[in-house]
Length: 300
Image 1 (cartoon, helix red, strand yellow):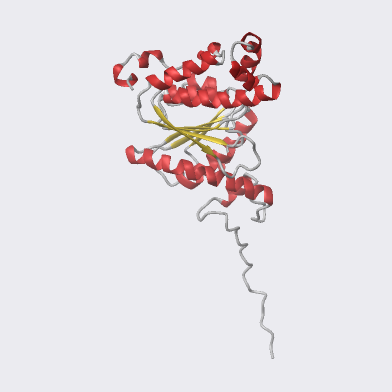
Image 2 (cartoon, helix red, strand yellow):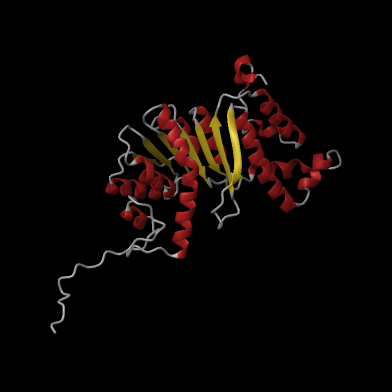
C-alpha cells in the first residue's frame, strides 16, 4: 500500500491561548511582551493580561456611556509608562471607531514616549498620542484638548495621582479612574507636626509609631482624594481591584461627575485636615471655594 504524501500539507497555525480575545492584535501583544514570539503566554505575562482585562471591565462601560452622549471619546492616561493600558484599550475599543476618538499617554520618560509612538505608528493606531510631560505640565499644555471625557492614572507615584485629579478637575472630566500609588507627602506632614499634637489629640496614637505614620498617611491620602472629588460634584466608588495580586496598592477609585451637592464633603474635608493637623495640605486637596458659594451646587 502506498503511503500518503504529507509533503504538501500546510503548516499548522499555532493555537492562541484562550485568554486572548477575538480580534486582538497579536503583534501588539508580542510587542508588549505579553505573548512570546511563538504566541505563547508565560505565567508572568498571563498575570499581566489578566490585570489589564480586569481593569478594562471597569473602564469599558464608562467609554460606552460617553459614546452614548456624543461621538468621539477622549481619554488621557497619566503615568502611562509603557502604555500597556492605553494600547489594550485602543485595541479592544478605540480601533474600530471612526469618530475622532483619541487616547493621550502622558509619561515623563522620553525613551518610553518614543517607543510607544513608534509602536502606535507601526500598528496603525492613528488615534493615539504620547507626550513627554509630567502630569502637572500636561494640565497647562496646549497639546491636549481643553476638556476630556476620561482620565486614568494607574500607580502614578507620589503626588502624580493628586496632579491627575487636578488635571481631571480642570479638564472637567466625566470619569476619573485611579489606582493610587505611594504618597509620602501627607505622612511627612503628620510626622512633622506629631510633636505638637501629642498629648492634645488622642488620634495621634494612630500615627505615633513610624510604620503607622506611613500606613495611616496612605489611608488618609486616599480619604482626602475621595472627599476632594465629592466636593467637586463627583460620585465616588472605592473598591478593591481584584487581580493585581502582585501589588499591595490594590485600591480602585472610580469617580463619575454628577454635579452632586458639594458643601458637606467640602466641610468634611476641611474638618479632617484640621483634626489631623494637616491644614497646610489645603492647597493640595482644594475644594473650589467659588463653587461652594453657588447655591445651585453647594446645598445639601
